[in-house]
Image (cartoon, rainbow, N blue to C red):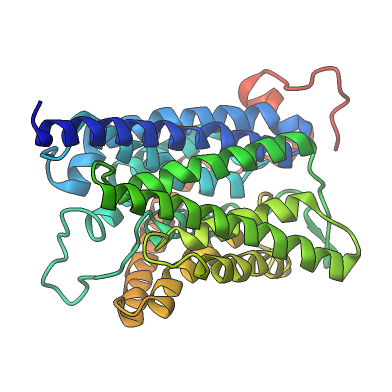
Length: 391
């Protein structure tokens, strides 16, 4: 066996293994969201997560991958492995959006949006960043460094969520008489399981994005990337717990986990470029941003049951900027330009698509359906049929 063949085989295996880790994020999002919503909406949330994986992946297979990369050609590994790795990412943008509009969104219109996101919106963002780059040579051409998608994936999903919340509105009774009604998580063990599955999946998310492990140099780079990813999650969890205890004398596990996820999102843009200490600071800032952004979005009456705007949008922006701040070879202006171009395209295109779909098939469930629960009305199966449904 030649050295080239050996490298081809090893990188193909590494890419497939990374893809499997990323797919663990599908049950991660499902469990996290199922634990954070009320029991009467759990089956609906689980159904949405499964359907997003199926529909977005199929749209990416049939249309999106070619739009993103121009062709299937790949000389360094199996073209099928390269596709599967990229396919594993696509549903995450819609997962971010769907979690933030939980408990009041209908499945059918959301699936129509999932098709457009998987086939056109997300692949277009990939095209101008990682892919074929149809903006090359134009004034909008971006040279942003974003290894695994702080902006390309997380902010894209965050901008789509912001557009969706603006169109769909808040859950019934969430904001009343100028007050914010607190709706506690229904199943904290599921929240913990989901967040930790996401954390594990991030090792494939970021480590796999290095692209190769078939040399000593690349093996070390993959290992450092995964270590830095984990470090940012650790520091995000620690600072979120610390802030919550200082402010309330309580350790809020849901906020601690969101702090960890915020740190993971923030480091995603450049874990391969940092030394072993920089991710600590990036995670500390990322976890802090989550703690302060969650109540800010509530004050703005942007109802986000899972904190996705705070975790993914805010930290997607912070993480992309952090590369320009902490890495000398990366221009902060290039990072800002990339953030701006993606924000303009992702928010505008998502808003237009959501607006049109909403005019044809409303996204928002009727108030009486929200009161009874989407499990009964959308899927016909209750996750906890022996429990009395909460109003």
